[in-house]
Structure formats: C-alpha cells, structure tokens
Image (cartoon, rainbow, N blue to C red; front, side, top):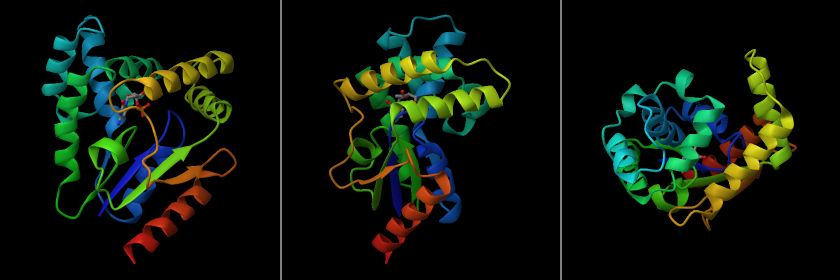
Length: 207
Ligand code: DC
C-alpha cells in the first residue's frame, strides 16, 4: 500500500505522514528532506543555489539513508530547498530515488508536494493536507521558539507566502492537489483529529 501525502510548508503533512507510517507499519520518506539535503550540500560547499549542473550532481550523489533531520529542518534550509526544487534536472534525479523508495515490497508512506501527482500517481491513498498561511506561520513560529530559537511571526508569514507562491507556480511538478486526493484542512483541527480522519480514509480504501 502506498500512501501519498502532499501539502504546503507547515501544514502538518510531515506529522501526519509519520503517524500513518507508525500506525500502518510502513516505511516513511519525507521527500522535502531530499530537496533540503541538496540545498544543504550546496550551502556547505558555498556554491550558488541556481546552478543546475552543480545541483543535479548533488542530487545524484544523495544517500537516502543519510538524511539528518536535525540538520536539515532549519527554516533557512527549507527556503533554499524551495529554490533548488524549481530545477527540472534536480527533480528528475531525486524522482528516481523517491520512486525506488516507494516501490519497496509492502509499500510506503511518502510526503512532499508532488507525490500524488508525479512521484506516485497510482498511490492507493492520496491525502492533501492544508491550513491557512496564518495558522502555518504560527505553528512554525511556535516550533522555533519552542526550541529556544528566535522567530518573528510576520517574517515567517511572509516566508510561508513566498514559499507557497514559488512551490505552486513552478513549471515542473507544482504543488497542487491530485484530482483524486482527499483534502484535510488542519486550520481548525488538531493533528490527532486530522490523523483519525486520515486513518478512516485509509481503512475505507483498504477495506
Ligand atoms: O516539505 P519541506 O518544507 O521540507 O520542503 C522543502 C522544499 O522542498 C519545498 O519548499 C519545496 C521542495 N519540495 C518539492 O519541491 N517537492 C517535494 N516533493 C518536497 C519538497
């Protein structure tokens, strides 16, 4: 069984994917981390983020087993990842790794922006998790403050809007719900209620 979860930054899709993978005992790939790892490799090497040859080479040498969330989850790396994600050859290189993860026996849970539309168009279950920009910016702000960092709500809200705009309007594999995706708006739902809804959807489709 393949469960595809898409949605914008800080929508709750990552938590949803993790909970579903634990509940259904399926391996999970956060594909955002793959784009983040490419951006991180370029930043560390002090290379530009818009050189497609360099970014493609970084994507081709990516090791899915070595994605370190504690390093890659930084807010600025998300912004840089959104910039490398517009390049078709970067997406192509990562697509191969993502599809090979999805095709393992027994299935998998993948989350990202284009899982239901491009990476796994035949996924058994497709969820599109959203929330308003204000709710998502507040969550991101709280998360950073909770870790003892500095965060300003208005700056984060502007970043969230900029990232939505870039991810939704790029030419290749833009952020858009698959036609057959189930929409889950978490603006007014806590994650536990949203998770229960998702489990019901998966079980109904499985049954
Ligand atoms: O989900 P995230 O915030 O970790 O993703 C970081 C960026 O990576 C996101 O802004 C766009 C890009 N991305 C993508 O283009 N396609 C995916 N399947 C996942 C992420």
